[in-house]
Image 1: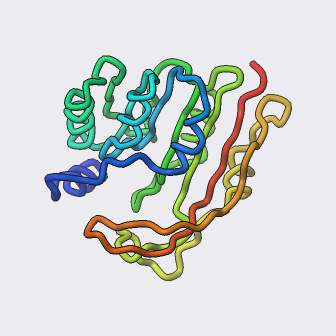
Image 2: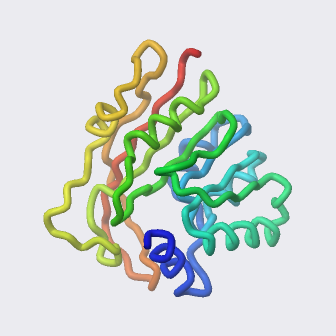
Length: 204
């Protein structure tokens, strides 16, 4: 059911915004390129941006439609040699390897997902010095699929507490809730809040 939901989500429009998420650009821009994992890669904007900047990217999504579109966009951009796109239900499987950067941009779903376990697995997959960037919705945009007025958006510190990482091996570099002007799929704009958590692995 979940795979079909996201296949329909990505299959209902012939084109999707493929710009990179600004908080990923802000975080990864100053970094030397290495190995990256893009969890919930969706339309592939982050994957292609990272590959264009020299990263070797493992792009992951539960939707086979999204995975195929990311592969096509990587080919169109001439960076398919730096992109491996894989279909994963992260509740069950996680991409192999270790990474200098794991990006989880808006890894939120209307279906049950053991997010804390997934993100902890991501933290464990970091190389020493590697970064886990988690960006979540902190508010409901007018175009969001979830318009539940009672929804609770976990704060960055709540997310970090759920991960329960050893502070001698991981440290929090950023935990804040910036606001920005966002543009929806039909061109509408709104002020939204992002919940941002950036964690670095400091030891083996």
